[in-house]
Length: 325
Image (cartoon, rainbow, N blue to C red; front, side, top):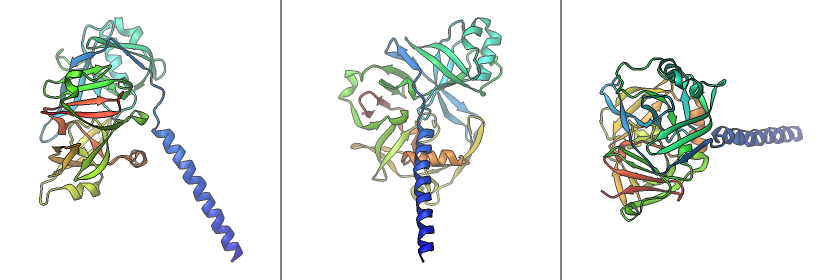
C-alpha cells in the first residue's frame, strides 16, 4: 500500500511538473518577438483593395485585404496582405527576388541576409514604416504579373504596425487609416467594447448567441464571418442548411473550410450584427489548435460581418469600435 502511494505521488508530481513546463512552453510559443516597426507621418491613409480567390467555387470576392506600399527604387506599387492574425510582419522571399530581378535599384534594400532583411522601409499612404529587421519567408510569386495593375503581394503586414496606435477601417470606401488617436468626428458615432492587445493579438469582448465570448479579430480570414470549433459550428448551423466546402491556402498549406448559414448575431454592446455564416477549418496542425485553446479565444472573427461598415481598432485606448450606420 505504501509503495502504491509513493508511486502515485511520483506520478502526480511528474504530471504537475510537465503541466507547468507545458504552460511555459506554450506561452513562449504564443509570445511574438520584440516589435521591430516604427511608423511616422501619421495619419497614414490609403485605399485598400480586395484580392479575389477565383479557384474557389463560388468565387470568393474578398479573399484578402491588401494595402499598397511604396518601396525605394521600385516604380511599381506593391502590396501587403493586412492580417491582424499575424503579430509580426513578414516578407516573401520569392516576391523580393522577382523585384530585384526586374528593378536592380532595389537589390541593396531587398536582399535578405540569411532569412532577414534589415532597415527595410516602405511608404504607407502619407506615412512611412521602417523595420529594423524583418523576417523573410520562402513564399510568394516568383515572377511579376504581366498586367502592371494586378496587385503584386510582397508580404504580410501584421499587428506590430498597430501597437500604440489607432486603425480606422472603412469597408464601404475601402479606406485604411492608421492614426495616433481616434478622430473626434467618429467618437460620438461609435459603440465601443473592450479590446485586449496582449501578445499583439486583437482580442475583443463580444456576444455570440447571447453568450459572452472573447474573439480574435483576424482580418486575414477575410472570406469568413466567424471561424470556430466544429462543436460550436454544429450548434450555430441552421437546420437543413447546405454546407459549402472550400480549399483554403494558408501560406502554402491547404486546409478545408466548411461554411454553413446561421441565424446567430454578433453582439457589440447594444448593437447586434448578423453573422449570416459560420465556418470551421479542417486540417490545422496540433500546434495551431493548441495555441488557440491556450489563448482562450472563443473563435476568429473575419471581415465579413463588417462589410459596408466602419470599425475602429483603438489599440492605444484598449477598445474596439463599430461606427453606427
